[in-house]
Structure formats: C-alpha cells, structure tokens
Image 1 (tube, rainbow, N blue to C red):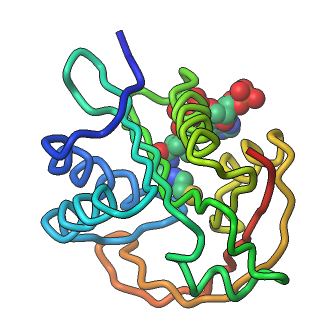
Image 2 (cartoon, protein in one colour):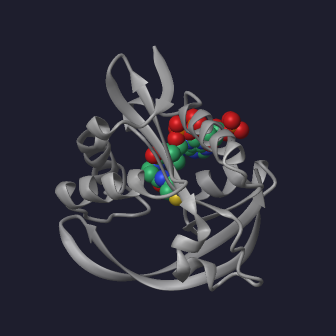
Length: 176
Ligand SMILES: CC(C)(COP(=O)(O)OP(=O)(O)OC[C@H]1O[C@@H](n2cnc3c(N)ncnc32)[C@H](O)[C@@H]1OP(=O)(O)O)[C@@H](O)C(=O)NCCC(=O)NCCS
C-alpha cells in the first residue's frame, strides 16, 4: 500500500537515488550525483517553511514532492512580474517509474499544497520544461497559468553522449 507522509532525514538517500533516476529520463536526460542530491534534500528539509512529502510503499520511497518559500528561489522569482515574493515554490515532484499512473504525483501535490496552506501560503509557483506536458497539464488542471518563460541551455546525456540542448522552461502560478 502506498501512503503519503512527511519526509524524515533518514529518507534522504532513497529520495536522492529516486531523483537521480527520474531526471535521467526524457525530457530531462540530466545527470546528478546521488551524494550531492542527498545533501541538497537534507539542506532543503532544514530550511525555514520547507515542505517535503514522500510516497511510501511498504517502507520503500517511491515518490517525492518538495517546496519552499519563493524568496529562496531568486532566479525564478525575478522572472515573474511582481516577483511573487509571498508565494510558495513547488520545487520537486517525481515518482518511481514502476509506480506511475496510479495518482501518486497528484496525492503528493495535494499533500504538499495542504501543508503549505497550513504554513500560511495562498499562492504557488512551479517551473517545468515546456516539453514536460504531464506536469503542465496537471497544474493547468489545478488552475495554474503560465506567467513567464525562460530559455536555458541544459546539459543532457542522451544515448551516452553529453550535449548542450536549448530548453524552454515555463513558469506557472496558481492558488493553493
Ligand atoms: C510527472 C510524474 C511525477 C507523474 O507521476 P504519476 O504518479 O505517474 O502521476 P499521476 O498518476 O498522479 O498522474 C497525474 C496526472 O497526469 C496524467 N499522466 C501521468 N502520466 C502520464 C503520461 N505518461 N501521459 C499522459 N498523462 C499522464 C495522469 O493521467 C493524471 O491526470 P488525471 O488525474 O487527469 O488522469 C512522473 O511521470 C515523473 O516522475 N516523471 C519524471 C520526473 C519529472 O518530470 N518530474 C516533474 C518535474 S517538473
């Protein structure tokens, strides 16, 4: 059975492994170091008003959503007209490929949103790739709208080859 619960520091390694696996997939094709990601999740968990939820399948971490105050994501905040300084930033969402299409991401999004509301946030911002249509649809369905775009160059590992690829990011804002 899959349950959604708050992240514990002892989840950090498993969350980092899952993150690395999920973002090696299309459309991201990115390569991250597990230990660096583990340290990032630990740091995030220690942050003021951060929220990390995990999907737990009988003791195995199979999904994660994470977020923190928008002010801590200055590079995204400055792209938004008005700044959205009071918003909550929806930083991460990923689910083990074996557990997809079962509504786990949606539950993780809802649980993170509920916790952010408890912390006093009413609006949220998320950034994704223009090519990540699942996420764009998921948030569009929750009433989020595109408020900015960002053209970046991403280092991708496709078929074992390292390439710099132009990538358009879309930034969406909505109510919690
Ligand atoms: C995106 C991701 C988190 C979705 O996880 P998931 O648990 O399979 O999603 P859910 O089952 O909760 O589905 C959420 C919605 O997306 C839709 N969806 C999920 N996967 C889909 C797919 N492959 N194709 C089309 N729609 C899809 C579902 O139908 C559902 O919509 P509905 O409720 O209207 O039917 C998962 O595919 C993933 O981890 N991808 C890699 C990491 C990533 O890209 N994260 C987002 C970074 S911004």
